[in-house]
Amino acid sequence: MGNWFVCQIKYNKQDEKGNVKKVTEAYLVDAILYSEAEERIYRELSGIVPNGEFHITDLRRSPLADIFHFEDSTTWYKCKITYNLADETTQKIKKVVEYLMVTAENIKQAYERLEDGLRAMIEPYTVVSITECAFMEVFGYEGDKNGQPKVLTAEAQE
Image (cartoon, rainbow, N blue to C red; front, side, top):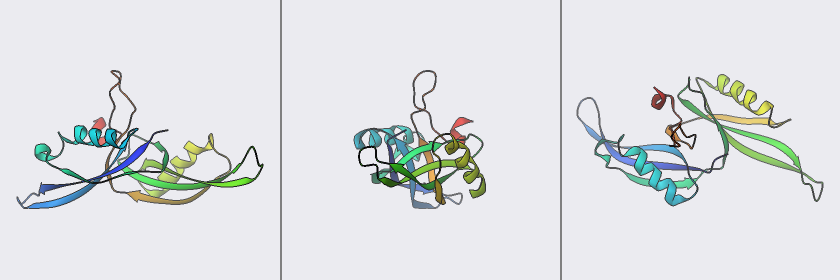
């Protein structure tokens, strides 16, 4: 389970015709603190954004509980689920809301992958919504053999 931050950046991008326009892109970063999330986004994007010239327009904590990444898909879907949990001290039933991310080719596949991922974790639960997200990339802490973080997108895995 990560500690996720949504980071929006703005920079000048040149299109195929040579026209320059300002674009805003969103990224998801696994970090402990805001300062770490900011440092990671600058480090990760310095080689991706032309001239490394961009600025962060928004950095906020995300309530994501977990992500399910599949290398065969590049589209991220945000899934909202609910389930009941008994409070051990009061014995009252509490409704819990969690958000998860999953990569898939379409909403149907996202639902199926979410079901597969949750089957062993939570029973019973309700899938409330599944929406496509516009994250350009997700930077998680699934380290490689050298302990370096790796990008959780299919483009970076090629």
